Amino acid sequence: MPLKDLMAPFYVWKRAFEKPYTTAKPIEERPGAANYRGFHTNDLDLCIGCGTCETICQNEAIDMVPVPGIRPKPGDSGLRPMVDNGRCCWCALCVDICTTGSLRMTNEYIWVSSDPDVYRFIPGTGDNPWDHQELGYRRDPEYHLLRLERSDMEMLDPEQSRQSFIEVVKGYSAEQARKEADRCVDCGICVATCPAHMDIPEYIKAVRDGDFETGLRLLYRTNPMPATCGRICTHRCEDVCSVGHMGDPVAIRWLKRYICDQIPEAEYAGILRDETPTNGRKVAIIGTGPGGLSAAYYLVKLGYAVTLYEAHPQAGGMLRYGVPSYRLPYDQLDKDIDYILSLGVTIHYNTRIGREAEFSELMEAYDAVFFSTGLTEPYGLGVEGENHPRVLSGLQVLEDVTHDRDPGVGTQVAVIGGGNVAMDAARVSCRLGAEVTLLYRRRIEDMPADPEEIHEAQTEQIRFVTQAIPVQVTDAPTPNQVTIQWGEAEMVPDEKGGRPRPVLMEDRMHTETYDSIISAIGQGGDYEFLSQDYADRIEIKRGKVVCNQHRQTGIPKLFVGGDIANNTADAISAIADGHQAAMGIDRFLSG
Image 1 (cartoon, one colour):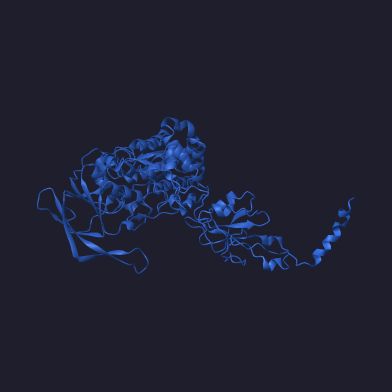
Image 2 (tube, rainbow, N blue to C red):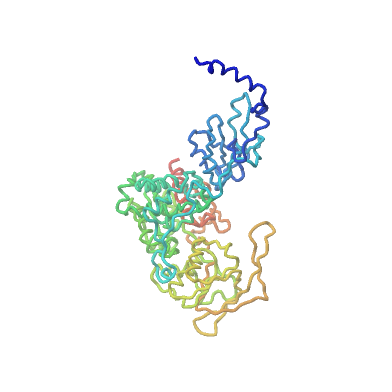
């Protein structure tokens, strides 16, 4: 062995007199770097419990758990992440994927305890000293694992759309649909908000996989009118989409439509394979809107003989007679209706209960009766002169157009209202060649119409006049016209914290003349079909029929649903009511 190697250990001793390079108190003197990935913290108020952090964690170090004091609500599951530091590898993918930016990592990394259970904790609960630590890892605001922009939807040019009743929205291509489906994080927050509780993540997965048959079966589990809802649903699910906290919400409605657009109606029966047993009991349904059709579908699958009664010559209710074809092409509505009828459902058209058939006869002839007759009685303007012959009902204008009748609106039209009926009446009048002014008593942001309806109406050159309160309707100087006097409104804050209320400023009045004024300020229910002895036994509160959670009225065999019984007044809620009523009727009749 060389002498150098023998002497090497002795050279180490010279280091004994040098200043050491180690840190004497590493726990006290070595804080983590400003962007260090240490222990987790979470803003519990900002967090919505979507579970994307749990899904992305490759070590299964995160579980979603309930937290005392936090309850589920629309857009919030009520759960919060629990982190197991025995499994965590500090990769921070959970922070990068967090849809609200609530989950972060502090620069604290030292935690000494003999109790292994303490290392499984719920960040943000205030039990740990670093919960309010500002330093540590955060996702860069410009960095996202998800694509935040929605896939573009091809639409008719506004100039083209205002000249025809061709469908405005053209739908997704295969590439667009797959790209949009890829944006879904599979959190399921949307399911609780959907009135029908559709399995949204699963049917979006079906789009991603190109498995449209599975997608169709998933749709029909809770919604037998998917081609319709894929076009006109109010899509409250998108309002709570977790991806929408960072960018555009996933286009859930358009993906539902995409599935139905891929499958011809002739193939529905073979794909769905719905069985219709017979149990010997009969149910009558009054009204063939979304509520009545939905109830019919689920009742016939339970074995009931179902008979529908419709006052009009075609089925669909307000979907056909209140929604223009440029929003809902009637062949798509018929696609849904025809499949339901193909299961053996009987329908009597042009049969108005109380006229061609008596309500009492149905109550005697059937084991149960469900009615979903909608809101068909327009509200008046509530001003002097509102019965002028040139003041038209928005609902009547829309029905005339459905029947290919000229509603006679003229070339200068004023529409009063801010809901979907007002937007449809204005846009229909525009397509009939009129210049349209829309008068609304509040602001645009207060309008109850769907935002896309408002936007499309504006792009079609409909003139919006907000904070305008009608005061009086009078004869015009020229025949076949009408004059309206309206005043500007001041928005006064509500003392109870509600939306500001419009107050008329009497010194700021305007007078305008039109060929017609279309009233579209809302509508109520028509209960004339109920004979008095039955009407006295059900409760009607604020214009709505009162029922229990099974949609059952005060008369045990009488059930109700749709706009006439709920406050949301949209198709998907009526569909959910119909499904719920079918289960309620089955519960009532089967004991």
